[in-house]
Length: 242
Length: 213
Image (cartoon, rainbow over all chains, first blue to last red; front, top):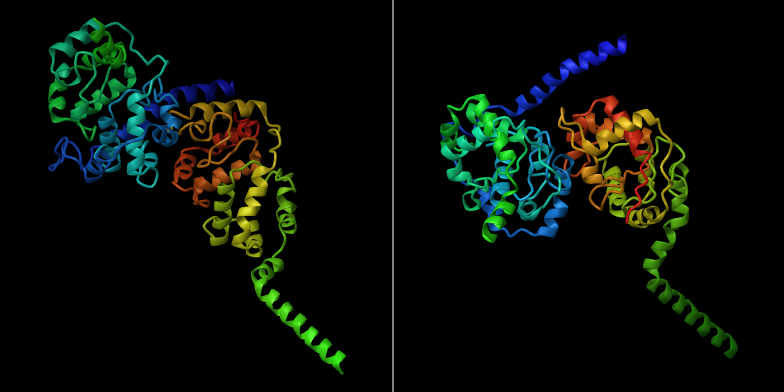
């Protein structure tokens, strides 16, 4: 009986714990989106420094060891979307996100201690970025229920999403627009929600505008559609072959 | 008389030779005064056992640890950067010049196969070790220390380490008593764990074999 009660309490608290862990990320950034001086894409001094360095794949693989505890050895994160899939992400995007977490533009208290200056050097960020860009995984990513995929496709292609993130969800390396194809459903949903609410510190104002009027259901549908896209590298290779 | 003179000259030569060789050997003299490694190892062995597989669960196994890691810890004990009631009494007796040889010795000792543990708790610990705790953002230990606990030159070997010692150290990281983790990463991790989770992980770590390659 006692055990049943304990189990019940634990189960009842689980969603609350998950929600509170997520809420910790959902804090308005004092330097980020919504603040007076925020300009998307304005390079932080450190970002310039990292971009100037040339990364090394082997060194990056070793430096990534400190990230594997959450993002896993194949860099594909956790299927439920708590930690994103980083395999194949553009180096420019990795550099932007890590330096902006460090710089307090994107608020991410979970990642902060492991990405802070004392934990990884600018050279290591450059190395990790190169490693991730070429990383591969055999693991399936997390997907949605599959109920509204057609709706998600329609919203993605007819809205403004595709303009920046591409028909294959490949993003744009030169602009540091992330690849989002085959990302975990849970992560896509959460980040779109943050962006909509203006609490993802480094969101693009155009994207906030683009998804402002989407319902919760719309966001779920798009997240599901994107999670079911193959890795963009596969799509691009297939297109080339045709 | 001639004989006496001759002897005097000879003894003078001997004295001179002794003086010169004494001067030449001076650095060696200093070494000769230092305690030989074997003798110094006895000091460590009293707590850590001669082969570095300590019999007292509160004292860490040193066998198979990366030598640079051992040297770093010894320096930190010396400087007070890492605090330990026992080591703070021992370390003044050891010269910094001896650290490398001691570390080399223990790193070459064969680690004991992992110890016994509470199977139920170890199973919970394995989950944390391999997957982390998603709800409280605890990274998986395996990320840095490897699946088998073998570690690398940057992250120490923890395979087969005494669970009592692992608990003690994780609690130390958690409350900030141990603060010599290079990148403050262990403090960040341990702060996110509760005591029950720490005990479970330690119970699993002691079972790891750490066989590498």
